[in-house]
Image 1 (spheres, rainbow, N blue to C red):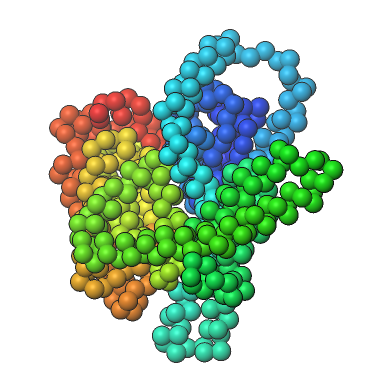
Image 2: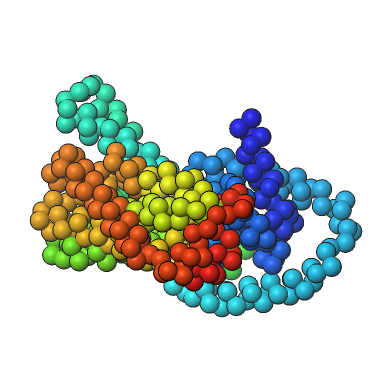
Length: 496
């Protein structure tokens, strides 16, 4: 029955994105189904948003449909299967006429896409998208290994199961010890090279034998440069490989190109990139610690307050390399718990909207369905279904995040660091991953205090300042059809 339900969800989405022939690629992240589309104008946005299982849509380089954690991983394979079936059946119906307005819509869509690409295809944004595409597939392993590490740390502190903890340590640390290889593989794939060659070059960084090599007057150490070094090594490998493809004869390409790619990139990595990336990684760790040690409350205020806009734009994934570098160096990232406070502000905001709009069944239904995910740190449903469309509540949610971030940052200034041993979860889901310099108990209490402050300030700011009198008049009315999971377009317009 569950499979049929997921297939039903996929089947309801497919015709609203223009059908199988309009879909050029299908991938998913933790919460979103990401589609490449041939013709954006064929998408029926409002009808998609009205589907009970769709929490929101985001238009970027790919068209992103927010389905929520867990569900997206189950719906995606069903959607892919439907797309394949639809494309296989397409030749038989290729001669079927298109709707009368197709040409007009296609022209309009082309114009929209051109305008959007001109706006968003800056080198910086394209670079951030590539970085996100490299690291997002690694998040499930980071979460799983991080939670195992947290359980292992708890068992060690309690002196329980001493015969089991070494095995748990191996399980938790195995992926992190080889993460450079996975980064290299994904980097080469993203930049258009042979993935396995990118992984092979990046593997040099974690090879124990580099300890016998001296560069820049000092011995190298295995893992020096970390994920940044792996990323740089793989990018270099891609360019070397492409250069070789231009002049190496096809008859010997299978021998010469891989050899030169690994040799040239490997030598540059050993005698240059590992040292440089190591210095950069050390600088990132030093800068993060200095920032929180000296300006903790202010830094937390800024980071917690600005993180929701980053999530809204999808740019928060560009922070993954920084988090990963801090985890490699210190065992935890001190930035993630502060950034997680943005989700707390969003939850407090949503509860205030629920209280204020007592007669708007549509918005209240959205909040009821999205709030559990919000408590677990998945903010997109509340952002796209509630606060962002309403306008003011999005700002007051950011205020709540800023307050929670300032609280956690203040304790970092006072010497109590709050960190996470992995990236991915936030909200209450982050508790198993918490770590710091004064034990789990102290760390958890500070984090809990930040969450509660974020909830309260987000609620109060939204309740008293999130609505104008006209917004309340327009929005606080009984809705005749409460089925849509987001406010209607007319409600959005009135709210603004």
